[in-house]
Amino acid sequence: MNKKVYLIQPTYRDKFGKLLKGKSLYTISLALPSLSATIPPDWEKQLCYEFFEDVDFDTDASIIGISSMGYEIYRGIELAKEFRRRGKTVIFGGFQAHMSTDFVAPHCDAVVHGNPGIPAMKRILEDAYEGKLQRDYHCGVDLDYQVDYRALDTRRVLFTPVFTSVGCNYLCDYCCIASIYKGNCRVRKLRHVFAELEYLHGRTRRIAFMDTNIHSRHTYLKALCEGMIERGFRFVWGAQATIDIGDDEHTLRLLRRAGCKALFIGLESFSQANLEAVNKGLSAETYGRRIRNIHRAGIKIAAFLMYGFDHDTQDTAAELSRLVTENRIALPMINLLVPLPGTVLFERLRAENRLLIRDEGDFLRNNIGYNSSFNLCLFRPKHMTPDEAEEGFIELLGRLSGYGQIIRRSFSRDLKLSVFFLHSNWLFRREYIRLRKLRSKRLAVAVDAGGEQRIPCADKSTAFGRHEGRP
Image (cartoon, rainbow, N blue to C red; front, side, top):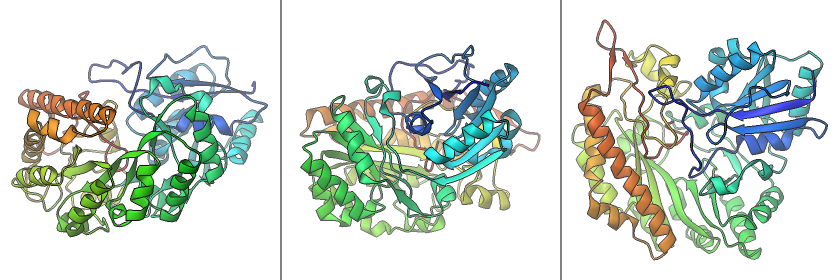
């Protein structure tokens, strides 16, 4: 065995079995640059984002590392099988491998759980080299190193990803982050973050903080913004946060001065009953005030919303579209509620016999493309049939897809920001048109003998999703 590791971020297959490929993305996972930074100096490394380039099956690396965040786990298994056939040692890591260990275990030699740092990676590779590789490595959360941005071509992404933390304070039932980190948030040393920003400042002005909730540690966030201001960084950036940041007006002003133009906020629902039903510890009645505070700070809001909660009805589409418009949401990112395997929501719906998929494999087979919305109902809602939920979802998209609405939502005094939101909202409209056509051609295609089981049908949509509460 030689001391060389090949790290791969797989792509997806579309409904026709074709690998999704492209030249650029809005943003991308930081898994490969992070893992690259942990590889010991006496090891060679080779990296591959399969979306951008073909996998080198003839690599001379003896160890193949595959990182999977979601649906690409199927492609990852394809790669694993081929590399093992060629005598390679295969190691899986990433969220989906952790949550679906039994699913991937037959196809690899080891699964890495958590965020391995430099010491853990050294031990894993030494074990592999010495023929003592364990089946599982539980590494906890080690963030004490700088990301290797040489592993990422910033020209291929519109917004270069950066992160300051992992985890989140909240324990929402639908969220895989909550199921993994159990309400904990771990932050990185700011000296690492500032060193990375110094490196990136000479290569791009557009970054995206990929933290699940950048406001989890508000004192830390203030220090981050103050440091960016002091260093004279001229980044244009956005970040994910919870709506309670709207009460922190001092931090909002700092965010704007530091270059923040948009916050991507998980509102999920404007119904308090819905929020309580999924253990989202926020008050819906505070949404309006907090949204106004964020707008007053000069920051636009892109809102994650879900349809199909237990207190949603066929009237919810009209009400939700009205609230999105009234609250001047710049970009609505809407999905049908997704029971992600491994989450509290998934287990509860299974216990209530409300799931319409046979197993985890049916869910993972959905093969939705990058930046896609989830548009299929994989469970029985309380006040709608699954078909009614899918119809209501498309109706909701349609209510928000008018040309006038798109233009009003996208307008900003910042021309570049207006262009970004206009393009994003245009994709939102295009997705509505696409889904409406697919729906008319029978979107949900598989029904079991009892008429209840549903196997998702893949389509390459173009709106926006996220890993937290949706793919």
